[in-house]
Length: 292
Image: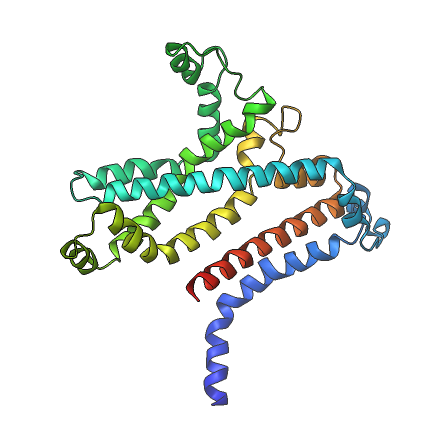
């Protein structure tokens, strides 16, 4: 038995050792860093590093910018997440329908934005959102709607980022939903049709319940990704206007690499980790409660 255990450790070691060195050790170092005042002076001389306990975390609670970034991040997660999942599910249902032709072509087209560089996508969407020459305002003009300063108006900046992010990412979840739809036995639909169930009843009584594990998985993955909102506001708005698109990760980046408050930045990172962990546990608990 011991020889088998040693053999297992021997074969697992090449995979586990890099994970331990490049994930757990940096994470542990960042956690320790969050209890210090590590800044640009400490980079030159570690003797300037002081242990400050929970000071960074208490300072976060009194920082209006942190609460603004938290509100913006939750706005993005709670509005953009469900919209993106609904768009992914709707598209997956359309592409799974038997009457649709050229399914492979449409799946490729819808998945293409996922593998496109986000920076390039953001730059293109900046032109689409241009208040004077942008395509969106040009289309709105046909309906008599005045031009909107999508990225310059604090009320429209975050919805504009949500729209762009939905277009960029919905193809990934769409593929997962299509896989979930293909795993539903066709016999269930045949039995429902023999019992006289219409399309809506088949969708609510068969498709949605059978897709629930897939939906939970997609929801958790989407929530984790949405809480890490960074590139879109960094490229398109730099967190503006008036901090209306400042996210927690962007604030963490600004504190760590613009102002070199690395201890404070690490504290933001672990607060975000706690929020994501709590959200994941809540979704898992709700799913188990629904199944009970």
